[in-house]
Image 1 (cartoon, rainbow, N blue to C red):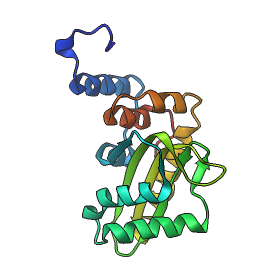
Image 2: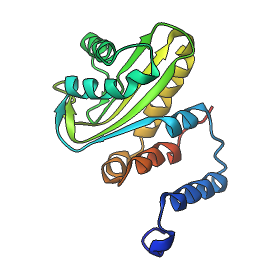
Image 3: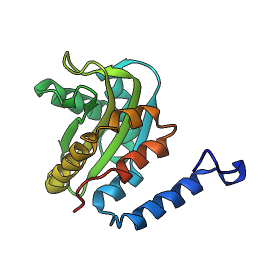
Image 4: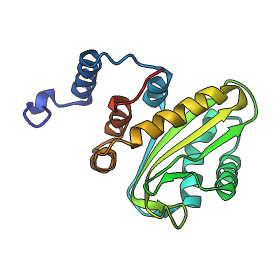
Length: 182
């Protein structure tokens, strides 16, 4: 549709309208994961980086939402990764940490076009979903992990993720993917 639409109509408003049409057509009822993705911070990195550099970079984005410094968030993410790799498959990792307090939950979406080295088995991770939440959000934490796992099982996920042209397109991949909604 975008290819055949005139330039005057080409905007993210058009994409939002098309997303709305698809939601109605497919009778998609948005759940709390959809709302979380709509509000998530998205980081789109061009260069190849290592895991520690990624964690430092995303911690800077996440710190204003929490009562933790960027150094503390980066350290918690690194500690969690040292316990065991959070790479679900060679191309996708879901680093997640539990923080003190209540009513805290956020996800950060990162695309690393040239890949991030997480471990030997996951040396070219291109999709990273960082989850930070408090203990009282444990159930939602597990629901978010399950939603991500369902989304990345789509055979076209890697291709669509790599070809996405913007942060909003990355969100759309997550919002419009076929998954069980709660």
